[in-house]
Image (cartoon, rainbow, N blue to C red):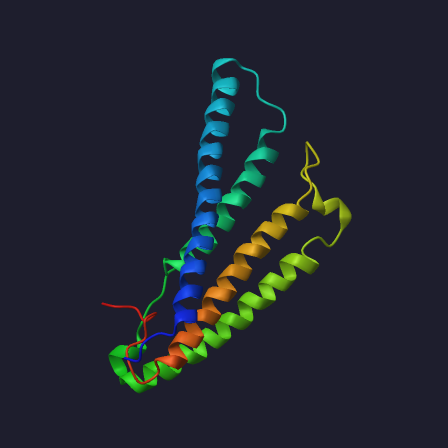
Length: 175
């Protein structure tokens, strides 16, 4: 296996740190959502006073949590994948299909990122929550950043796969 260049390792560390920030935001959102849920249940069932707009706050908190999960899961390869090809084909075919898969995934992620930043809020009335009129746009941007991070991670894995095409791919799943 060829040695990784210093810039490759540096970029890998930076992606790890950025994934940690996304994970922190997602973790805080989970804690916040837990608190929101406990307060909503207490107010609704014990005090018989449902809180107006609690659903709005829950929805935007879930969006932050999803953004954190997408980015952190991308970094740690926590998303579901099924490797059937390696059982029927050789290593070279697997490496080629990995490159094709990474290119396709990069294209889809780039399109999703573009859509979240540019096209997500079509009708202006659809861009706010029902009760508090919280704008969805910043949360779409947060999801766009998470998908952009995923695209960057996929580009990094694509470059790593090309650099290590004949050797051991550092991003290949191990069984």
